[in-house]
Image 1 (tube, rainbow, N blue to C red):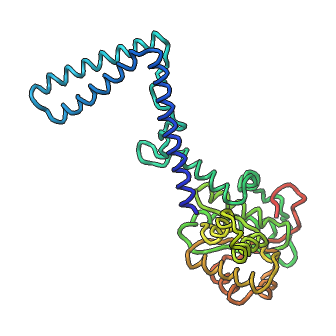
Image 2: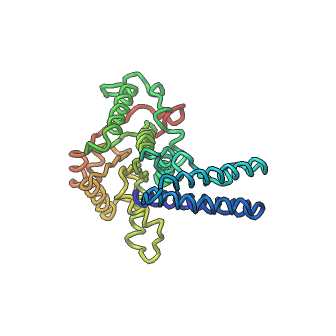
Image 3: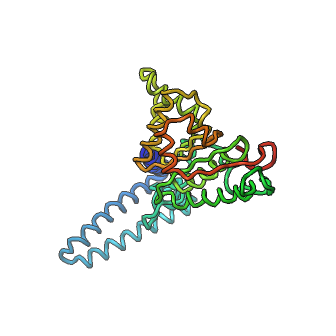
Length: 331
């Protein structure tokens, strides 16, 4: 999927370059119609420039004298052209290709071969589009994270206060982001509703998308709906559904939210194992968020699923009072 995104961006750049070339051709033709002499000058400059290049390569008899003559002639023609343009008040841009990004000339890479800022932004925009998070990440990110909305008082039998706990989870989340491409760990967030699980998922998603990582967010209910459509309605399957299905396995990070809200049966349990197992084998990262306790998860899902989660997932419990009605993160 990421390769498809990159190819799409490359095609966009190619279209932009072709448009710049066509626009230049149109502007030139307009000038040539008004001032025929300009066309004669441009044709002469093109012809003499080619002859000069050949002369410099071949270096035949009297090549120094001939090249000097060609240079002088070219200089006179360019001066005449400049004079006409100034007199007729023709902007220099009329004879230049105008790109959407002058820094990379619509190639995506600057003069040093580095990715241009415009390419990076296009890539990030596309990654946002396919993530399933869209505008949400403008509101839910680490810049908006405020641990003060969590209580600093002891909560039940928990050893840490909700505030200290969320700070620790945020620290581990930042570590997950920093070492995303080198470690092989996944994350499981569990706890009651309204204690910041989805918000933290979104914080992680934004940071990774901004680094050019392909992220897919899906609720468990929606994900199994996509899988069911792919498995049982192939004749009616749309391209969008094919892409959504492949993304479940191909995204660099899959955020599976609200696990346990789906219809739990042999089909969903089997597919969940396939997703978790395949993504582990292909070293694709996964974050699972659920309102279920670990005990309830063990009762609901197979031993095969739980063994993989326990062995390859860093598990974090969210707790405290529901903060969704207060200012700050939401579940």
